[in-house]
Length: 174
Image 1 (cartoon, rainbow, N blue to C red):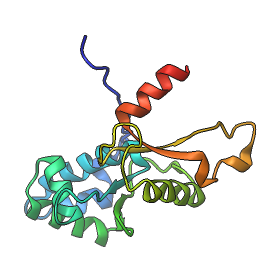
Image 2: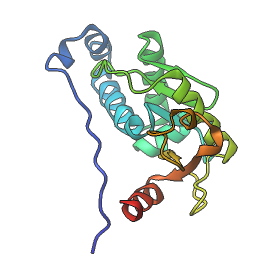
Image 3: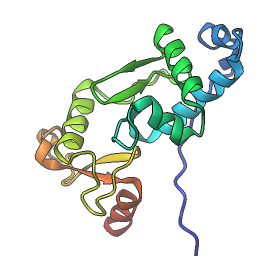
Image 4: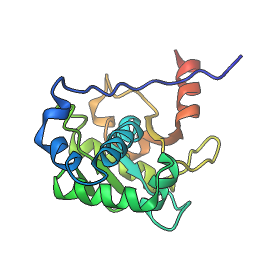
């Protein structure tokens, strides 16, 4: 049988295309292309806490994003410049964080994001099971922190998994 696909929801507000943050880039030459690239980046970052991580396949993060999205480096670079100016994205040490005008819900605390980043750095942005490096990584809690909240942000309670291995692990556990 075929491999199960994992779906992520990208919730767009009814007035998405009427928002100033979207209307402004759409009015410039190539604006529709940049809007599509922004939507593709939202989808790409959806499973990784709104971050697109640099893993070293290409020379720069922008080149990796262009490769992943199948868009030109120039278009991705210009789109990111627009997003930075509109405060819809920002760079971290090794990633591009995507702010979504479509979803105002908080997708995690700063403490969680720091824990996740620390787990990824410790594991060298590599799945500990299959040793694959990839943009779509998950930080998995080894022991549930639901009954022991003190374990939530303990770096020793986290491992880096690719999406496939993370999904397989949860199939076995559930």
